Length: 295
Image: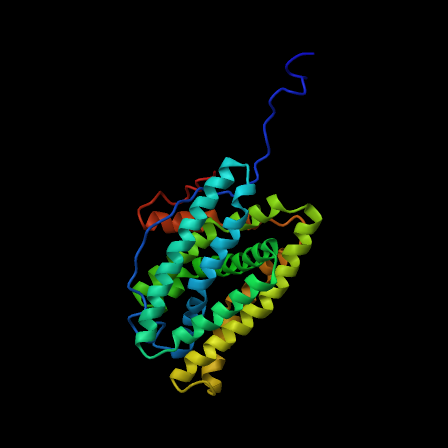
């Protein structure tokens, strides 16, 4: 029997990673959060972003833990390397949003209360869910952040016109890195789960995440608006609704990407937006625009 047909002959292995973009941890620091109503002087839209930020420190730590629990089961060196950078990026996201939240709190906003609320939800998930189900929540929430990040990067010129410079830099950096590592947790869950179970788990996880994420976000925005005496203001809530659903409409425009999740063949890089990352990198001196840097 020839070496070419021998059952012991080495054959190329299929990578457990589906990532289309090489990425690395950036140890960036920001001074965002020093201005009170940094989005166009509007307390309502600023409250939307601040409510998101209130979820991030504890959320990013949860994401890291759920991936770390499964890390030892991954045999692919490429995915192992991506896990390392994923953990690094998320740890710095947690640090920088904590610093941001602390500056918002110094302005009189109840960020500590919001963070405790998010922490209680995460603690409940850790207590009630098996480790793979916890990873499923991470994968679902990473899908949320990826589609919202994609929208923010596509609307970056509009965002730059309304946001203060430091906040613009913080949110764009975060959006870029969420795009870069958007498939890592997904690929880990796929690698450690049987195909049928994988599909069921990720669908259930997205449905659960959709409910609890939006409840948490609404409660956070209510408490932030309350600090400005606007919790009962139809105009304030109307501006938030218009921003989220009409113009620029990140939720409305993200519906197709959100629904793609339910395709059995779905992978995060079916939404190939490497050019948005490349444009941001070019603007920050990392690489020429258009260099997709495919892995």
